[in-house]
Length: 152
Length: 261
Image (cartoon, rainbow over all chains, first blue to last red; front, side, top):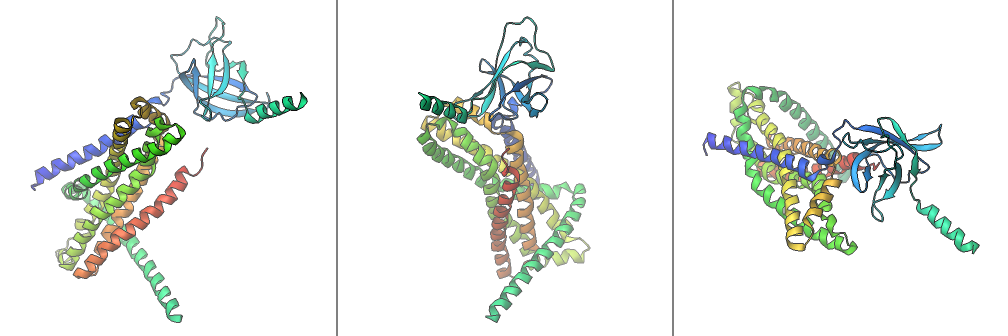
């Protein structure tokens, strides 16, 4: 096999390898869903965040509009503080929007669901969501159920 | 009794000697890589024999491994009513583990043994000493291009293996078993993480490529220059590469995926 054919085949091989890497990155991974940045940040305080993790989706009516970027315990408020990055195009959230932690499916991962309120002013970068609902903890529900069944 | 201990000691000293010899050889090869900048033709020719000629086995194996994953995954997942998560199972298994490891094992069997046999035969027919006589460093002329070619080819082959495997899984799952095509891709895209899974898989295949090619060229260069010596070196390449790849895979997996956040 002469040199020129060899070189063409090697070129095709390397191109195929990069095409495979590209396919893996674009079609198989979550690259298309990763943050492109430039969003605005909103904080919310929760009594208990349950199993919420950094990177969990922030949804409104089921549509993902952002991601949780930071979770930490605020010792001044004695509550967990969650910071979320919301996409810049979604700037219509009223100031009295409420945030709840729901579970996707029965055993799925937990996510933040936003419900818009009725305020005329919108949330801006650095604002705080005041109306929150903590995660439902299995232990609390079971304890509640047992308490009710035994007191009846 | 004493003989057993003596031979055990001899065996371990031999092991350390080969390891040390191999490391010094690796240093020579790495230093020799610099001279390849002016002679890319050599690397292209080796890339052909190491990469292009391995494509057939990688493509066919990738396709079949993906199809088997699709089938087995479907059978188990359907017990939990979770068939639509087939894409996640196939993609994660391939990208994280099977792609780099199986491609490395196939690489060792096909390209690694060829490299060892080639270099060993050059040593046996005194071509390497002939080059030294002509003031041509055989490590720079013969070994370094093969080493660089192996290192470049390995991650490409692993990526091709994984990509073809994902499509093989799709062919079996969506085409034959009735998994929803939209769920196959959308769930996979939601779960497979670019940084945690794909980059880690690429890092693994780079490490495996380095080790597999190192073992192959070292065994060839260090072979006893007889026909029996060359054949022993070739088998040693395949066996040692398999052991090294599997051992490193465990360590890398523990490092990369060991601590769920």
